[in-house]
Length: 132
Image (tube, rainbow, N blue to C red; front, side, top):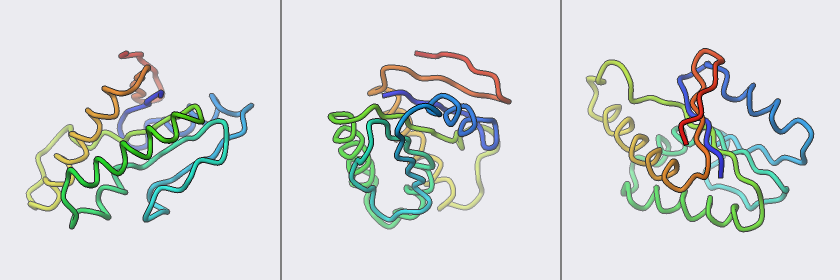
């Protein structure tokens, strides 16, 4: 599993689109789904996991993280998996408790995803830096 992480609008999706341009790809925008779909292609790109977490804040954190990780591991058994993660934990700590909770949950999920990944690349202002 490859992970591309960076700030919002820093070029992650554009970089990945170029990377997979010659492949059969299933692009999953988590902002568009309530449940992660079954894998249908040789390469799967999962983007916007933070938005999936936000829509499921009423659930226990462990339940949401487990659901995402189980699905990613299922994908990995049959496809090449790329995950795009938007970094939302840098900068000012949010005042609203719900926003802080979202930031913390996304941070813990990102740690788990990066731990499982074979490659992690940070994209910042369109520049890439391999971290793992």
